[in-house]
Length: 423
Image (cartoon, rainbow, N blue to C red; front, side):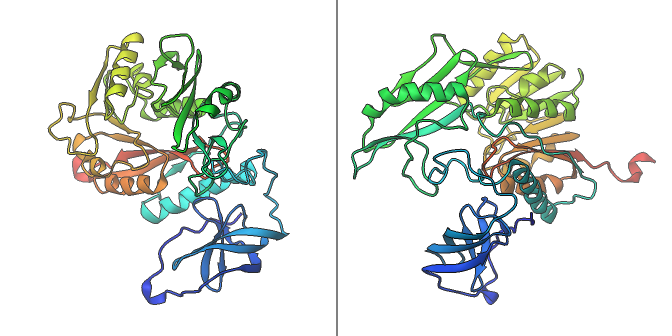
C-alpha cells in the first residue's frame, strides 16, 4: 500500500477551486487519508471517499463540496484492492463505530505505522529512534467499554439504541456488535427490552463496561449493575477498582501490554522517583510502584484520585502519593512540582501543551508519553525536544482494531550535556 497523504491546507497563491457535484466515473484512489477514507483528486480538488482503498478504481457521487475539499461515496467499483476484505459486521455500511473493516488487519497495521512515522519524521529528529513492531490483538470482541445512544426517531417514532452513524448524530439501532466482548453483547441484548421503552426524543447516553464481576450498564434513565459493591479489573496481580461511568482502556490485553512496556522502558528501581501525570485510577502508577521507590500520581478528576488512593491502599503500595490538580493550568505552585528520575504522561486527545512546555524543569532523565491522538502528541513532543530531550523509542499498540485510531508509546531521553561535562 502507498503511504497516506498528510492533509494540509494549500497555500492561497496556488489554490485551485473546482466546484464538484453529481457523479464522477473511474476515479482512482491514491492513498488513505488520516481518518481512513480513500483520497483521490477530481479536477485538481482533493476528494475523500468513504470505504475506498488505494489502487481502487471507483465511480463516486459527490455528497459535500467545500472550498478546500469534497466528500463522496462510491457507487461502483471497477477495480478492487488486493488488501480489501469483506466486513464482518452487518451494520458496517451505516454505523460510524468502525472505519476500516474493509481493510485486512495486517494492512491496517502497516498503514497505521506508516502514517504515524510519516507525521513524526516531518516534525522531530528521528535519526537515533528505535522503532518497535506494532503490537495488536484479535480484531473482534475486544472492546470492554462502550457508549451508546438511546433516542426515539422524531419522524418514525421508532426507539433506537446503538452507535451514531458516520458524521451524523443519528444512531444506528443495533442488537449485536462484533467489536464488543461477549459479556457486553449478552448484557446489551438483555437490556434492550428494558431500555427501548424508555427512549424519548431527547438522546440519552447509555454506558456499558465489563468488570471482573460482571457488566455495569448506566444511564440517566437506567441502571443495571452486578450484585457487588464496586467494579474492578485485574492488572499485574493488582486489583483496580474503577468508576463504571469513568475511564478505563477499552482493550484489556492491549492495556496489559502497554503497562508492561512502560515498566520495561522506565526500568524503575528502589531509588527512583516517578511522576505519573493524568494518572487516572492508577493504571500505570501502581504497576510502577511495584518496582520504584516512590510514585507520585496527578489527576484532574477528584473521583479518580479517590479511587487511585484506595487502589494503592488495597494493594498495599505505600510508596505512592496522589494529587488532584488541573494539569492544563500552571503547576509551579503545586506541592508535587519537583525533581523526578522519570515522568509518564497519559493525557486525553487534547494532549498537554502547557505542561510539556515546562516539563524540562522537573529534570527527569526519561519521559514516556502515551497518546491516542497523533497530532497533539507530536506537538507536545516538539515542546519536550526543545528542552533538551530526544526521541529514543516508539511503539504503536492497536488498541482499536478496525478503526483509524492508534495508541502510541514514546520514550524520550535527556540529551547529555556537551563534552565539557565529561572532562
